[in-house]
Image (tube, rainbow over all chains, first blue to last red; front, top):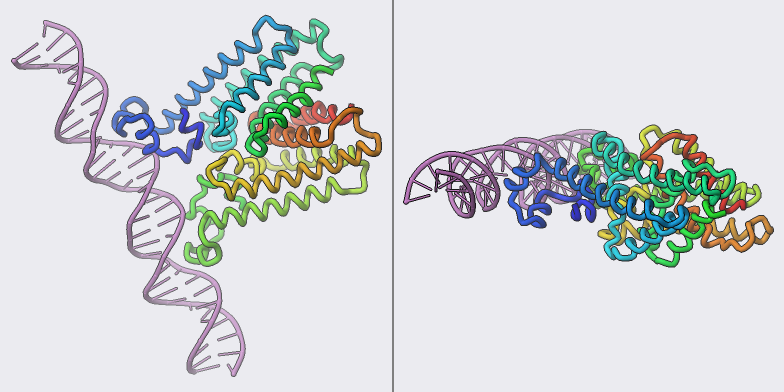
Length: 178
Length: 178
DNA sequence: GCGGTACTTGAACGATCGTTCAATAACAAC
DNA sequence: GTTGTTATTGAACGATCGTTCAAGTACCGC
């Protein structure tokens, strides 16, 4: 998974994988049908980890809007802790393989939709508690936050400076706070 | 350029390029040093087109904030007019080749920084005309808008529906309007 | 026409790609 | 200790990768 994350699907060769896993080709193909299948398993593994993270942060017992703040704070922490700048495997994959491969794409989109759904739930909760800026639609705001994540992921490749990313997050979250 | 845009750098083979250009390998290598060089020229071509678009929209004689609205409107028009969902070659490249290739990366970042700089100029103009929400920093807002572009580009691969993207843009621009 | 420069052709190169498989080693049960 | 199952090995396959180049064609001024 780490290799696919670092280098992308197409640029990661089976040779790379055999060296990293210290498994010979035959063993690799004994465990997985082929490179593609191994990649799908990597995606699933990554998506599971992401789901755990999302659940932990967005379903904690903090107030809804605090949870969203914490989410982005953790996102930036994680970004800062990754000097390689790998970004997000799902986002990377979405841009790399795009429409050509329906199965891979669907799996990525499904994982991302789960995050959006959680955002929407949290925002709905905030709305019900009267903590959301009036007239704001949870599902639209959830989409804005997803766009924010994606944008930060790309912007980090352009300017990987923590303070700039912090400012962006502050501006972005001002929409839900206002 | 179109091929690189559609399929990405690594996934585009010289064979693809010879078929698309109807040039034999020798001719291609007579005109360009190698595949990489051809890709760099493609990037430059794309960046030039982008620059023209940015200049036309962000330096028109409309009021500053209107120009920014128009920019995003045109961005969504262009997105809707591209059923292949190619997105932005610069963003795609930034995520695909990431840190491994300094030269390619620098060229992409430079082109993107130009867009950010233009945003910043327009926002500064709005600030001077008292049309910007008080206490907002142009350079931070410019970064937010860049993040918005990036995010929309990715979100479009997830949900390519115009109305959703419109809503996101409205929410995003509410930050500069407020 | 002729000679020379510029461009095109397409076969071929070595390297690497993803994948397979017969041979070998490791380990389990009895 | 023998047997049967399971996992590992690493050489080899055909396909494709990016690249080269000698040979051939087109086009120019004279």
